Image 1: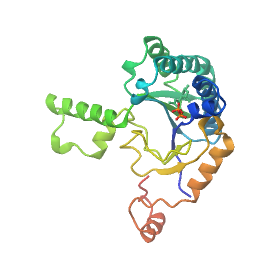
Image 2: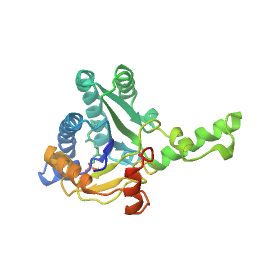
Image 3: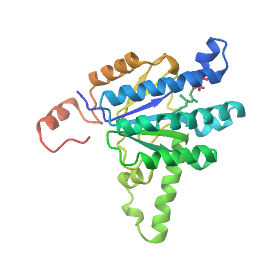
Length: 248
Ligand code: FPP
């Protein structure tokens, strides 16, 4: 049974959930926030140490200004209302993405939540905000180039672990499982580098309807999969009996 340390989720389908009910899209996003609260609690209860949610992509800035404004408002209110719960549950908040583009009040509440939960060790909840995977890789490459320019790093010293450490997700293990709701089968510029070996789970359920039972189905299916990391099944069986050979 493969261990699950990091679950990443593309929360898709809020808009369609609302449109199906002839409601404004923002009502779907509001219901989406309630799903976030339920799923964070369910992951915490299951002892999943890392959960990463794609809450707002770099491309989402192109949505109508009212929708962007409403999403930012929901985000700010979510953070304010969840701080106590995060502190009680030992949840540490992290943020990945180009957060400098977010409205100043959202940046302030994010910084406060990140710093007030920094010592928590039960679970790391990472929100991807103004996030794009290619964008993040470019930022990481720039950070490495700066180090080379300063003479702190030689080009030949740059390997996969150096690039991983230069990304926004530094210190977070790669996702073991990615869930995407709403029937779309795309990665949509999410965690491009980090998802290299992730198992993928797609469900037709729209994010506002995604519940604990759907989460459990995804986790059960994940547990039935054999992760080979490019090796053969025989090699894996041999590794399992050789101590100290575990790659993940
Ligand atoms: C996708 O639905 C969802 C988003 C673009 C935003 C996700 C945001 C939330 C769940 C609420 C805020 C998040 C937090 C963490 C408080 P969509 O609008 O793309 O749906 P559609 O594809 O049906 O139009």
